[in-house]
Amino acid sequence: MPRAFPMLPEPLSATAVLPFEKGFRLEKADPDLPGVSIVIPVWNAGPFLERTIRSLLMNDLAGCELILMDGGSTDMTMQVVEHYREHFTVVVSERDEGQSDAINKGMARAKKPILTWLNGDDLILPNRLKVVREAFRDRPGTKVVVGNAYLTELDLTPIHRFNYAPERLTFGKLLNYTMHHLVQPSVFFSREAWQACGPVKHELHYAMDADLFLSMAGRFAFEHVPVDVAYSVYHSECKTLKKRAESLAELALVQTMHGGFKEAEITLGQLVALYNETKARAEALEASAGAGNDVALLHRKLNAMARERRHARDALLSASADLPA
Image (cartoon, rainbow, N blue to C red; front, side):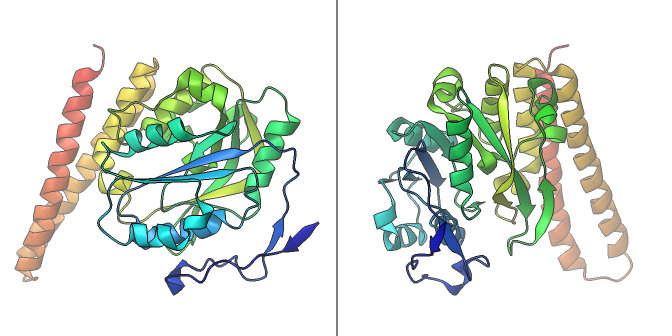
């Protein structure tokens, strides 16, 4: 039976209060459920982290642990962490070598049989950890569990719902990752799967999750739980948005590492399309500059687009050079 929702700490920011807090009732997890270690790698996540933490606290965390790995933030990240400090098993704040390094260091500290990581701007939906844990308990031998997920705007307005099905969770499908990618916070894996396929590659900065999940899909069957588990929040500070060209190029390299040469060509095709789209936008702005518009503003936009074009071009050339002939 659901029980009354224990009071959350008062938020540091009113914007951190989640829309599903009102009227929420916590579902108690059975005491025999396997525990989950959730690694939270962050760096300057202050504007978003409090919502992430509050989303986790809307789950029964008995038998679970939260591991916060901060890369030496200079914003209010650690102030937020201290406000919720009692809920963390481990808090580390020190310079690291990027997200992959933070994930690996966090996993090295994890003690529970189920593992995942949660970025400091994403959310786990209420009472969903219980569903994931039940799947591991009730399906003996399970190594990876995938739930449905939403891609949302910063205000949590849905952009797209990822409704998975077992036939989409195979290595062959996932290799075409731009068409069949997984939403990382909705993926949970066993310690055995991590030991077999991890750690995440230190040199990857954008597609480390794709690389890990493809490795796991090549070894293990993925189990699907047909419920919405997570929100992946899309905003202007997301590195896969700010560095779209670099992330596509890195994904293509990951696909080739797993034998997906044709799939990498599809990904590089998206990179070419991004380059051409940016070029067309820049040319349109150049044309409109001659029509009496604010030339200074247009030049600022053009300079920004020129940088984007150079990033796309450089990433494309780098990725193409590493593809087999």
